[in-house]
Length: 181
Image (cartoon, rainbow, N blue to C red; front, side, top):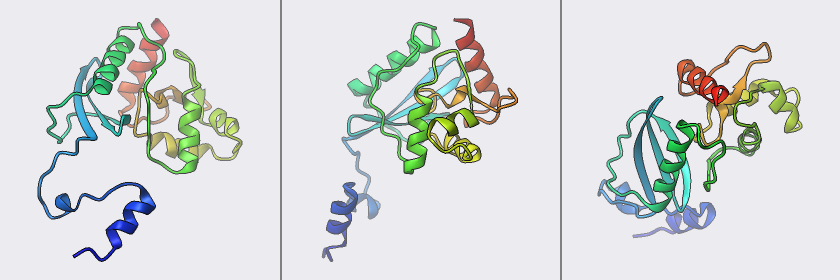
């Protein structure tokens, strides 16, 4: 019997809870898909929901999903072009989940041109929060869509690499690759 909680939750968060999956019944959500992609920097998993890219992660996915929708195909094609030096920007619908501050940082990261870098301080100033360098670093670390939202282009003010969710070696390879083309 529905107490009204799920109805209220769904109205409030516009994200329906699948009662069947809560009870342990396996269901495939037709609105969510995931696809693995072998890239020069390792295996990437791209996830979509409701016609947008929601996550790019490093490594294999535990999700078994044989479907590959048109958006995933477009994304994988653009990633291939990027890795072959033929694409400098991505034209895909992105829907990263994060706080208002994190989303502001991620939007600003998308303005860093291919082959260039910016510091955490530069991004903090650009979003009107000049004292928020460390918070910008945390937002970069939480970026759910690396590569498409290019947090690898962020470096420390002293020119050192700083961190990267995919590891410093991947960050270094991405930056070198972009600077060569």
